[in-house]
Image (cartoon, rainbow, N blue to C red; front, side, top):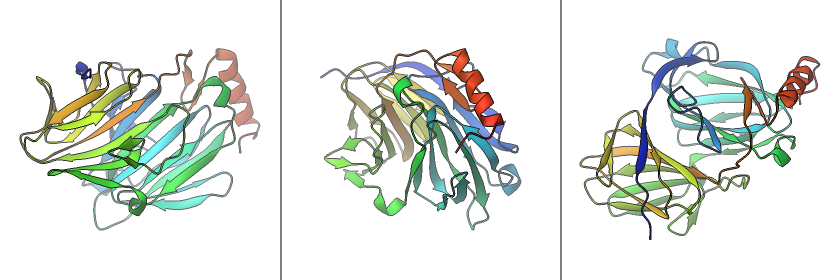
Amino acid sequence: MQSRMIKQVVNGIAAQDGAGVKLKRVLGQPALRNLDPFLMLDEFGSDNPNDYLAGFPPHPHRGFQTVTYMLDGKMQHQDSVGNKGLIEKGGIQWMNAGKGIIHEEMPQHSEVAMRGFQLWVNLPANEKMSEPNYQDIPASDVPIVNVGRSEVKVLAGSFANHTGPVSTQAVEPIFLDIKLHGEEPLDIPIPAGHNSFIYCYEGEINIQADTLKKSQLGVLTDGETVTISSHAESRCIVVAGAPINEAIVQYGPFVMNTEEEIRQAMKDYQSGKFA
């Protein structure tokens, strides 16, 4: 069985989005524009509520999926077709923007600071104009697998005969949140051919002879498994998906295959044709 190794290390950079929310942009920056099918990864979180409470006011999306995973705090969301809900600690929202939706995400005051991730996942051409929909998944629906002293939360895909609650099959996604304890290695199967990365957000982790420190992303080589370990308690996410292998033309929140489709998306949004 071929083991995956790190072929590129990317450091998260300071950025702002929405109404001035301070965050760390890891994927979707000059060092790593995208990793088919993934378009963006942001880590958000601060002890200062002024860094994030302005949130992400109404904004459009077309042609891809957005994933919001909350580590701490609360995020209220609503959209242009009347959906409304609250993403809380350990919960995940996987939204299919499809042919177009206007969406907002607003952090809520809570006893703990807000912290989490937003991931953008591309859609193949034949699904870009699909009907918008999303899954709001509470922490109680996320399987937790204990392997030795390590803990794996299965958000999407499968691990150790447990399947995550995310049902989208557009890119056969895998999304695992892993807590490592000590030096006992943990083997994570990843289908051969999937593009994949690991992002360390607490402590530091080892993959073969390489080390990822906090706020570093490691792009992985191809293979059937990746083995990770740590000298102390550390946390990371492992994300993988089947590449789409199509042209990517992106203009802000619109991700299509051609310039003409981007122009049409802008016209549709401006004329009120989004859901």
